[in-house]
Amino acid sequence: MKKSTKNNFSEKNSKQNKRNSNSQFYPNHINSSKKNNRSQINSTKNNNYKNLNKNDENNTFSSLKRRKPISKSNGEFSKKNSDVHQEFINKKNFDDWIWGKHSVYEALISERAINRIWCTSEIFSSEKFYILLKDFKSKGVLIEEVSWNRLSQLTYGASHQGVALQLACSKAISLEKLIDFSKNNCANPIILALDGITDPHNVGAIIRSAEAFDCKGIIIPQRRSAGLTGTVAKVAAGALEHLQVSRVVNLNRALDELKKNGFLVVGLSGDGQLSISNFLEKSPLVVIVGSEDKGISLLTQKKCDFLLRIPLKGKTSSLNASVAAAISLFHLTCK
Image 1 (cartoon, one colour):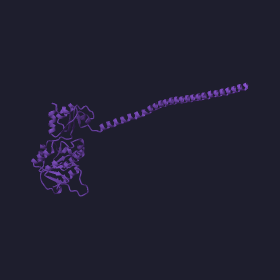
Image 2 (cartoon, helix red, strand yellow):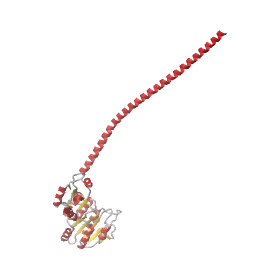
Image 3 (cartoon, rainbow, N blue to C red):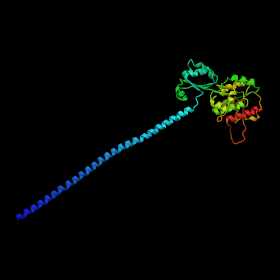
């Protein structure tokens, strides 16, 4: 009996030991597999991190490669813009422009025909220029006081020293001289006056028609009108050399002066009550041509003795200013 009990105990111990050994084996195997998995995951993460860093380096390098043509294209674009800007500057005709204190001063005292003057307030009030500029302003030359930056824009960054001018293609005479000249050369002279015509092509075409129909002169206001520029002279096709031009500071005051000297003031208007074909007055005339969009200003209309219309038969409601001037001069000179 004791022997069997011992055997049973030993069997139990062996089974227990076997179970314990198994229990010790499996957790160790599981832990080692977990460690292996963790090491694999960590190694994978590290590899991925290295690959990511490598990709980032590659991407950075490739992005730098890509940026080069972009910066190159930007450089080409800016260069292209500068070329276009330079080409635009070259196209702008500065042949009739003078800038700089000494050059402008010499042009002023040489009595050259001047269309327009730009200067800073310091130049205008200076002892050297003040009297000269006042004299030219009284003769109808447009003088504008502008800032230094504005003058730099007008001259495209030239060394202007605060003053610049644009030469005229023809000398202007005073209104008094124009009145005397017209009366001495014709019993019933016609003088053309422009009100608000700023397009130089229209002004040039009107001058051409005025000379062709033997007008004795043309009056151009100092402001709100194109001056005697190169474009005007080109469109006038030589007529400017044979026509007297007076530039006045104020058109309405000039009309009052003309009335005092026996001139009738006639305005061309689509709303005129009298047709130009029915106008039969024989007298020295001043014919006013207004702009296409606004026509003759209301204040100038009040100065008119007659408002004449050109009868139109078609559907077109108005005419170009230069065309209207030519038609009216034809009617007025054929009577």
